[in-house]
Image (cartoon, rainbow, N blue to C red):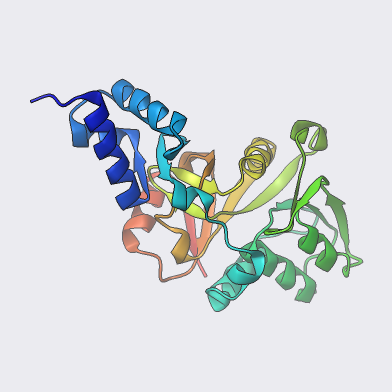
Length: 258
């Protein structure tokens, strides 16, 4: 028996709140309606201020609004992040141009670069205020900073004219930190402008490597960066579920366990 659109939307809202996030395809199967119908339902729920639409689905407002500070994240899984940072530095070659995003895992790459004596003649581009501060200690690194307004929770610098800030820049290796990594939703972070910057850097990079500990797998944040098939490698720790590793390898992504 068919149910009224208003009743279906109420039940969809309940599902999204219960799960934290849902994809259009999941909801289409759950409610036995077309994906176009689900898109209209999600549009209505977003208009009413009840959910946040994402690439291919929707988030609960609680999940969409959540973004811990850099200090809060810096103490979580710290040993795993240190090993991931060391593994990232081990694939950097002399003469590379690399881009480092903001985030506590990217900061471990920076700290390993500062300690390393083997990486020389390196060019680093970053939009992170604290990455830049630490890298200024290295005479062997050319440092370029993408400026803009500083986001105090993450120390990221962002500006609306992102394309102009990257004009004429080409990257060998892009090390991308994320808040969420999902087979359905891809790579996500909380801020849409930062996500836009990351999308552009992927396009300008010969190789994109995601750096993320096991806690990021299966998570979804507000802003979509890219699908998994748009990246080349993932560096993570051995506690990640084997099914995620298998899914990534099926997409042709190299998985490095640190």
